[in-house]
Length: 192
Image (cartoon, rainbow, N blue to C red; front, side):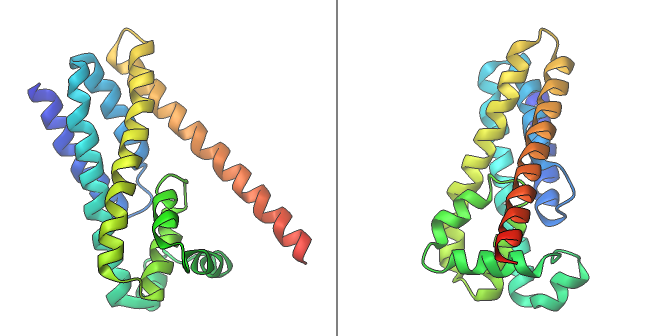
């Protein structure tokens, strides 16, 4: 159990850092840690889910604060803003549907950063963000931990489950990104 708690502590740090620096594969980290924890004891997955959710929540709060106070100039300097059109589209979606958009954005690969930027630049109240982001982070962590559990339960060795979980997450993310790009291309072709 000590190994799982140690892994959960590291997971918290990795996910918090990855929420601020969006190149770190945080979902794969949660899945891999859950697969590892499953081989220790099935209940050891609970601290993994909690650590993943807490790390994501803290990282999102820091990123949101940086965007609120640093503005677009800082977001451009950190290369968080890459697609102006997508940011405009997300800002329109946020109007009137703040909580559902925040919830879903955590689950869509590449969806969290544009939503956080749009919410910060549009002046979404702190209270709304703090309350809506909590279940979003918990749901995100639970989904990725479940994927890790599936990988961990299919293989007899922990390393095999970890590898399967990471590969599965990377494949799912790539497929979703591919479908999103195709949808965006079709939408731009139809409007152009």
